[in-house]
Length: 226
Image (tube, rainbow, N blue to C red; front, side):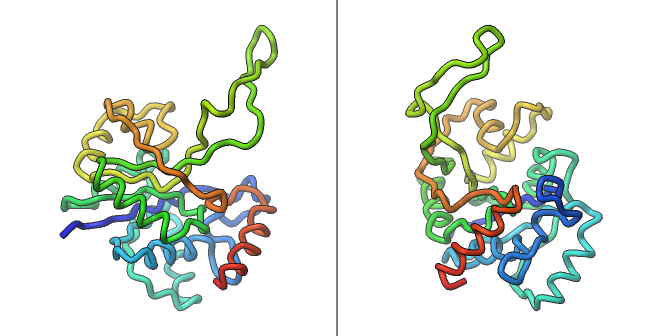
């Protein structure tokens, strides 16, 4: 029987939200954003063991929020690192058995349980699975000479999370020294020679970054009856 794990990375601040509260703790339809994210993984049907990676100074606050909102979904809180890379590594270090692990941004609360399950199954078959969507806007590359040049948007994909891997393989990938080029787990895995397998993501699976994102997320959750 396969073990499934979810590492929810919650290291963001509230700076671009014009808020003193970290994004993952902002209220979305009456409860913190991160609770919606945990619930999505809890509902995916595979019963993943959920690890929430938080700055150590936020652990007590998170415990208080769970008490206030009567949040009972079982999860383990892990101490975050200096960069996302280190936070993910801390989460991986807490996993002691073989299995499949999904790394997900805690501030992507609209990810569907169906996409999560598909990601796990695809990674189980092919070793890894990264969700992505096709860009709909035109794309230009900034250059020093011309200012910018047009590119074919069909040559690009916009990467989301979850990014899902065999636990043992991803652990080995995270033994490399940190680089600022490691903006996500796929970049780390690719650096180690892994071919990345993409599947179609969801446009609703966006990251809460700006104030208007919360308003959009609220409407979409209400449409789902959540």
